[in-house]
Length: 269
Image (tube, rainbow, N blue to C red; front, top):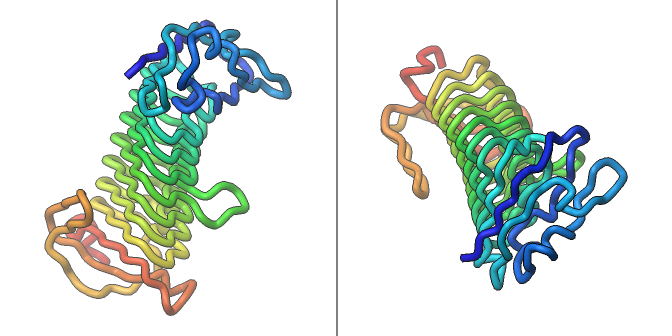
């Protein structure tokens, strides 16, 4: 696998739109050609080399290309957008829309990720070792269908509307989430090992959500169906007692969403 190293040259003021930073765009190009790829800052385009030092050449294909990004790129958006194969490793935190619409390959973020990470993702792996912002794996504004495939792993916590409109795939959060986790979920699996703030599964029609900690404000549209011992689905296995609910019946009497809630952390439910 060929490695391309991007080193941030200076602090970014106006945020960059850098959807050109993908293995697909870098594949088959030498360092000079990669330097000339366009990125947006406000209403203007600039060559990638205006902001990044480029070392190395792309591989023969996207699958044979690794992009390693050095520096704080929290003000750089859309890294890895739509990528189909290959690897991106971000040695720090990153900006909005990382991995949006990605179809394959792997992205590793060593720090935090801003909002809209993995938006409408179709395949591949997005692994965030820190925290994530709002709308992870969500549908974009005005659209109903979010993430359809792939896997998102967040080792820290996430904020509001995780998995909104999710149709498929998996999202695993080791920490906590805030409001409206799984809002309008239509499929797929969301696992939150920590706490949830409120309205988990609001307007949920199908799919599965598991919460291993306390839910501060439970959604009244869910109906208790019984107790289960442990949870196993795909490659996810959790031990302990879980209360099983179905819903969200506040939206439809034919809803098929399933919500598992840790019994010990939620004795009042």
